Length: 110
Image 1 (tube, helix red, strand yellow):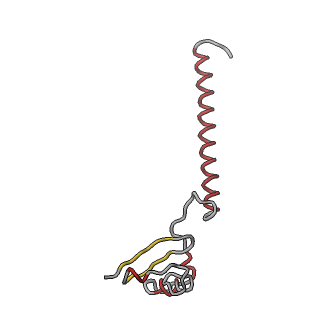
Image 2 (spheres, one colour; image 1 turned 90 degrees about the vertical axis):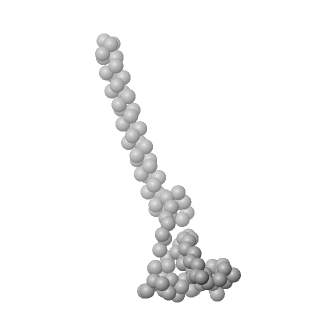
């Protein structure tokens, strides 16, 4: 029975055919099917035309890791900051208008 294991690491999508559980070798072993030198060959078994760009594709980007995805992280921080400040200014402005209206209705000039 064939077993397939798929997982994403820092810059590589690793797809490994595991006919026997004992044949698993770490990625830093040159004989491993998922070593950097054999990834194109391994992926090419199922994905016709697989090349270096194919095996370097990042499938699971994360916006919380500035070292792995600095552009995505920076965009996340900027957009979150923009959203928080826009809503903060909106609510502060609304509060000031409510306060003004509240005192005007009670006849108190400020």
